[in-house]
Amino acid sequence: MKVLGVLEANRVNGWINHLGAVDFSKMKDAARYFKILATAKVPIRIGYAIIEARGDGRVEEVVIAKVDRNFAVKPGSVEVHKCDAIATGWGFTPDLTLAHSLGVTTDIDVIDRSVVVHVDAFQETSQHGVFAAGESTGVGGVDLALIEGRVAGIAIAVQRGLISTMDAKNRSVGLAQERSRIRKFAQALLSVYKIREGWRSWLHPETIICRCEEVTFAQVRNVVHDLGASDVRTAKLLSRCGMGMCQGRVCGRIVADVVGAEIGRSATDDELRGIHNRPIAHPISLATLAKQGQ
Image (cartoon, rainbow, N blue to C red):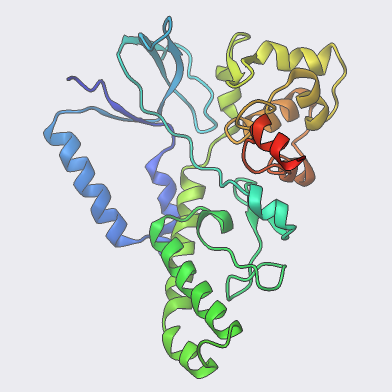
């Protein structure tokens, strides 16, 4: 097996502005991964991105290009390579379906405008007795999720009368400080490796925006410019983007960003929150519904 390369669109020198947040244990992990790739002679190309995947029923070619700091393709840098598989990732989006169903308050992250559950120092949400930990309160990795879970667990135990306030205080020593440290690193990571707006310049008319409903970029543009959609919800209703099996879990943020760009404004906070508003959290079969009516 031959690996054509590992590509990273952002520049690592972005860390210069976040040196105080560096987690050196993570840096050691990064150095170890770089060593493994170097030993295997896998090229590491910083400032490059996969802008297109081609093939008939399966991946056959990958198109890569050098991009500027806003992710716009630099002229003359496009390369086409034969390949059998592509592994690509553009960050994570927490699924807040249950959180919205419970009616808890959410915040908009100031860095990437992700929707996250609002919690207090004890990981309790705006609904008394409802706690949240992990990616739903902001993507920060397993270490942060475990610490938030411990904080929430201790607080729940106090509310239920299972442990005393003094016992909780003893169990919580160092947790708040460690949580703050890891959150600071997570925010720095998000800032350095932020998804820049230039990615939309990679889209072709036939690019699939919603895989469930097979809606293309051209169709999304059509509902805005020809059918008059002036907000994300209307664009979804007219194009069916985000209305398939996944209910927008995969394409919701993409649709919001693309529609926003086409109508000339960013998606509003309420529109971003609406992406996660799914009254039915899990697909329900007709047979199950029929039984409920009996």
